[in-house]
Image (cartoon, rainbow, N blue to C red; front, side, top):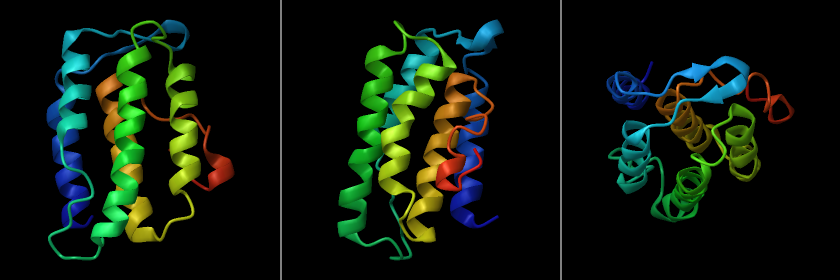
Length: 135
């Protein structure tokens, strides 16, 4: 696991202490802690790369993809607290980044995994296999 993945995993583990828990039938328990974690992730600078592998133009292109996803989730999750709705909101984001180079695709997937942890989801249950992503 590279340093970036280890940091993302650690942050996700810390966040999981206050995450929502999936309930029967694919529903999600959304409370103020979950909303606060989504807000915190939204405010966070994304695709920051101290090694310079991710170029400023790439960051400028990809950061809005994740932020737009977070905005959609934050706006609608209380009305649609279902795993299937979350997956449908992720679909355009995944479609936009899945052909990127590995050094861009991997952090994009890490952000999706963090969102899953915040929402108490185990993953996408194969929803993104057409993109060769098994989340």
